[in-house]
Each structure stands twice: as structure tokens, then as C-alpha cells.
Amino acid sequence: MSLKIIPLVLIIGGLAWLGAEYAENRNRPSRLKVPAETELSTVSGKAMGARVVERKAKKNVLAGRFAELDIKGAEGVVTVRVGEPHSERVLTGLSGETVTAKFDPKDEKAVFSLSTPDRQLINYRDTAAYKQKLAESNSGGYTAGWIVVSLGFAGLWISRKLQ
Image 1: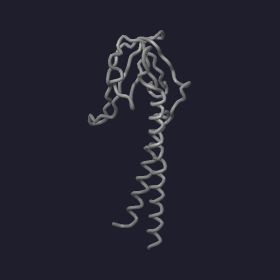
Image 2 (image 1 turned 90 degrees about the vertical axis):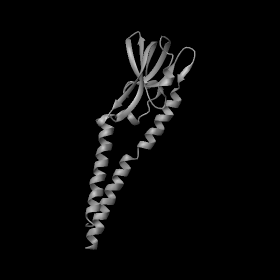
Image 3 (image 1 turned 30 degrees about the horizontal axis):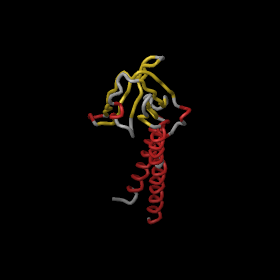
Image 4 (image 1 turned 120 degrees about the vertical axis):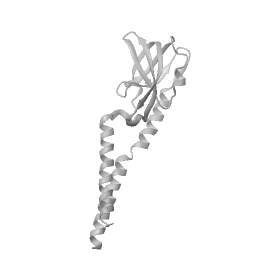
């Protein structure tokens, strides 16, 4: 195998990595953004029902799992999504209770805060801290892609110098 093959594989792999990061950020630009509490939408009303939703990708592989809660408020029934870091156990026994949910309408109505008149079920601070850590851990994708492309070009340059 020639020394030129490895740098070309690195260049192509790095460009594919950068393309995947770009596509993911373009499809869901709010996935790495933590909204301020004032930017969240609020719905109050009776909890109608909760269910677990499992999204499957190709070949029936589990791509995502979250819970949905239907809240009947003054503006009608609003479905909000309860995902990581909270489990669907938070929603048990809520049917028929009055709840208040603060959610991000830009991020598939993800719940940041959920409360009943008696207790706080989901705290904004905890959810925002989790999403901030998630954003920090995912922010290195572009950097890694550019490093791989740079290594590929450096390897190509070195292989030409050796000839």
C-alpha cells in the first residue's frame, strides 16, 4: 500500500466528518443552545396523558426514547416532550392533575421545567446544566474534523517530500 493512500483516506474521512457535523447543526440548530428561562413558552392546564415514544432508525435500531405529556390548557391540547436527563417516571400519576410546563418551542417542545401546585417535578436549573454539558461535549466535532483533514494534508505533503 502506497503512503499516499493513508493521507487521502484521512482527508476524505475528515471532510465526511465535517459534512456530518454541518448537516446535524443545520437540521437542529437549537440542539446545542440553552435558552434563557424567559425565552421558554409556558403552558398550564390538566395533564391528559403521558406516553413513551421510541424513534427507530433504519433496520429497526432505537434512535431515541422520550416521554410525551399532553396538557389541556386554555389554548387547547399541547404535547410537550420530556427527555434526558429526566425519565418517564417523573410523569407517573400526573393524569388529571393541574401542571405548569415551561418548554422550548424551537427544540421539539422539550420541557425544561414541570411543576404541579404542590411540587416541582423538573427544575429548569438542572435541565439547563445538563444541556450545557451536552453542548460542551458535542462542540468539538468541527475541531476534530479539521484536525483529521490537516493530518491528511500533512501526510500527503510528507509523502511527496519522501519521493
